[in-house]
Length: 452
Image 1: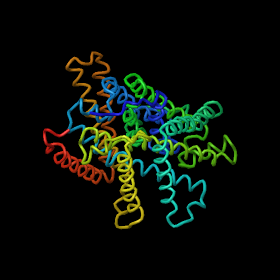
Image 2 (image 1 turned 180 degrees about the horizontal axis):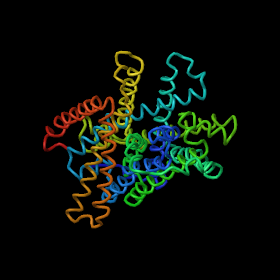
Image 3 (image 1 turned 60 degrees about the horizontal axis):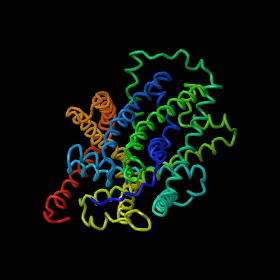
Image 4 (image 1 turned 135 degrees about the vertical axis):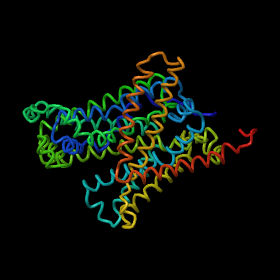
């Protein structure tokens, strides 16, 4: 299998991919949701954030075992192949290429456009201003990745640091200048825990995106060392950021006021720190934060069809799996990923503007996440199987970490399948997988034995 061996990215880019994708816009406006679900109990909110991080902390440690084993092009696809064979790997890659990456890219670009219009309302004066801004962001981020991977790397790492600045400022100022009496009486009891289970599920979705970094594993310098480190370090940083910000804003504003203000609590904290220009400055930080998430997802999205083409599992694989000598990317893979993103953006457009469709309340950001955790669970089980065979000697990493990772995945699955449109999401995802199975039978299983 031919693959590109150019190592362009370092450990910092690997960490920036994970942190930059997971920490988008949600954390800036999540405190009120957590407090409402925990009845204003900040200590319980911290526990909820810790439990929500189970999936990425132990998932990262578990997946790092696969990253140590191989750095072949494909990331999770390569891991899946070693775990359960080519068909399982293809279905994972097919779902990534057609649903997971393009749907998330579309919705994140739309979110970035929303925040931009909030900062510059005149840009949305046109009838379809929000959609035009979404397309501008998509074209700009795709163009940047196509023309210069170095520029994409610089943007990814710099946006990571920029998005952390307001979060840590609020955390530090809240701890120093906030009112400790606001949470001094909060305790964690069994009734409080039982009444807060909804918050655990809701927060778990805020941690999605941590497993994207393996998609550039074959382009990371010393990948078998740096990628596992990134998968272990990044979740711990994310958890620290989330808890610090949550405690800081709770001390600064107060749990009761945060629940009353809702999403405006972030703006109120910004105004206390920076004055009247605080809200606009923080909005700029949020936009950069969301664009960092968008860039990280695009980095993975443009490579997804290429990985399947390398394995000769797509029609015209011999053309899709060829890297352009100048751009060091597959132009056809990039184009395919862009088209799929436009399709999902079109579905999102219809779900918001056509009454007969909008009544179903389709959320394209929820469709891809749930099923991906089934694939993650398969990889976790694969690590346990390797441990049982004696290929992994550390029982803590081989058994305990995968079990905790599976528990974290089940929280996501429970939240997705019990959501209002959980059945619809399951049906759509099932149809996508069935189409992938049909394509696999047509392209791979019927391929002549002497074909390359």
